[in-house]
Image (cartoon, rainbow, N blue to C red; front, side, top):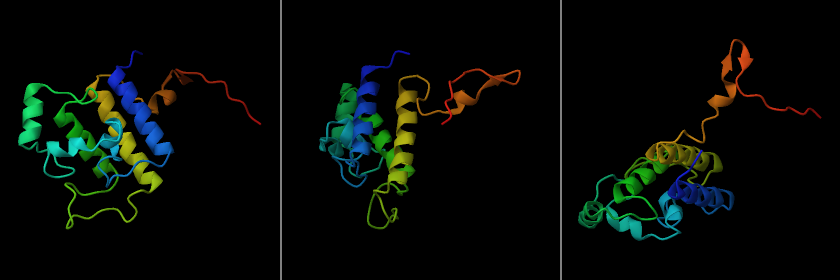
Length: 153
């Protein structure tokens, strides 16, 4: 399968951030989009609210000009962040009166957020979801479609 470079780079950055404990949903330079954009927080100026899909004036200008940030349009970036935050347990947009998870940096919550983001990123590039495990359980006439060498110790 040929994976577009923007997707490959995003997956590498998200993978590294997750495993290096550098993923923080409440920080614009360390959240899903912040990591995709090389830990820059300039993307936050595309919208007035963190976790909103509403582009502000600056965001609209960049969107209408066809501007891409590491391969992603402004509205795609806002969607990535909204998906990530909600899958981590936040109510969006982030603000003092919306509830948030008790421990926003909980590994399981972050993993759920990343799974949702990866599914969306794959859909953007029209490739099968790389997080979908269901294919390994496919069968035809009571036999597995995919065979694995299983070693028992």
